[in-house]
Image 1 (cartoon, one colour):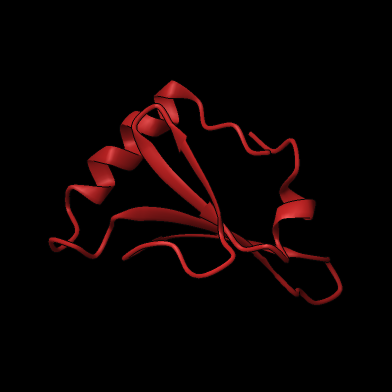
Image 2 (cartoon, rainbow, N blue to C red):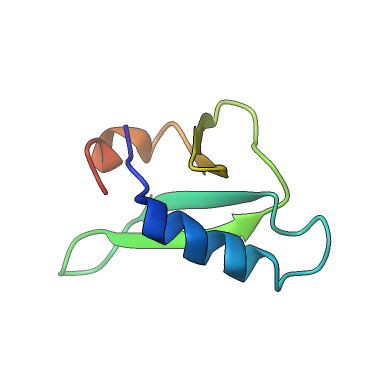
Length: 77
């Protein structure tokens, strides 16, 4: 569904390590409705997956993507 490069995974782990304990258990990737330019893409740390989330473990980073965003992120790197 989504590919996270090894280099990106290193950076994500580094940034997650700067967050308070328990606040950065997963990296959430989502799309949000935008204006005239189309979708906006969101990345942020979360405490864990929500019901229905797609869960991916790549290079030691846990990614979660909600089911609405998943089709739009297919093939993203």
